[in-house]
Length: 188
Image (cartoon, rainbow, N blue to C red):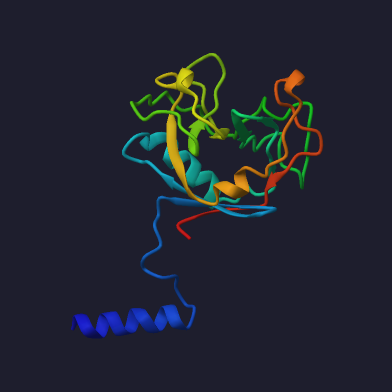
């Protein structure tokens, strides 16, 4: 019976009726202008934050959202689904001030260090104010450890992250004509 189930599942994949069974539901793929970035999400570290990112990605809310704040040697911030969508109602002066229509998520601090490629949730001064925005580290940021929620780590495509357009150092990394997340998918 198991052989028949395996054979049937294989046919469904071959004919494109379903995706391969190996698709990881905790992998996020961000398509950038220079290629894909694959992030391994960490639901064991930050279950509420990971669930939020997956929910927004599944709805397409992250598609075409700008990297509104990018600081050389530090990080690239994105995820403002309210003001950062470059295809509809993009408000560059407000990008970074918004979130989603969902409630904020309480902090889920951990011992996972902020190293190159780590994904953290952006927030205001209130530790419990994370909503939709996140950042990708270009370099280690020990000063963030235990202060911001870690949600994942880049497992491939960091070279594409390195090509994201940088912002103005004198204006807190604000980016004129920013790069964007073209398409964000979960489990691909």
